[in-house]
Length: 283
Image 1 (cartoon, rainbow, N blue to C red):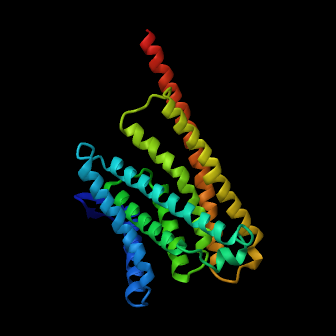
Image 2: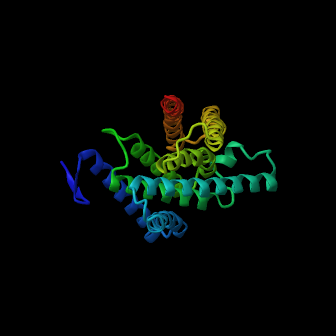
Image 3: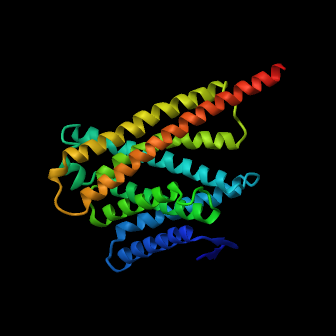
């Protein structure tokens, strides 16, 4: 089975992700138009914002039209916007109500911090845009691409939470990992721009921040959130919230392990490349 898109044949797996994306879009539009959920317009606004950003990057960087460069640049923008939004939401909540009770079960599951719904909606829109951009330009690898599975799981978790208006604060906490994503995307853009001097002070600082935020902003928060979910499992009402949350966090933790291994290999590879260049230069 295959379908035509952009003049190229699409296999069954790709078709599956395209269909699920359109089903998701139809579901969001149905909620907005027929269930009068006007607050979900921010999901569509998020998708349009990042798609427009994609077009602007292509326009202003006319000499660099590589789809991967454009996609990574927009991903960097998303990480910056989301990190700033999440930091603002958490800092505001801390100043307003203090740390006591901020991470209480009822606060994380039943309540929603100011601006948290909008921030989650906007980020949900980004993942839909990014899924489409990756499918359109085939910016993935593998028979069952982990990045497409990751985006699909996030879309399901985020959208169901927005529909039911529950666990919004939990999901905002998971987005702290975008602080680390900033340096992942910076590294990728830097390498695509041809700057690979591992001995450079800026590159060393970048690697330090990459590893620091990997542990502090990605691994540790996700482990703590998973632990919190398990400890508070008995406090959840019967329904899909707890299984979906545990499934989503299990997936994120597994992806973090894979990401950590990839970072370690990349770090070793860059050092070896630099050492080889120095050796060749001396000869």
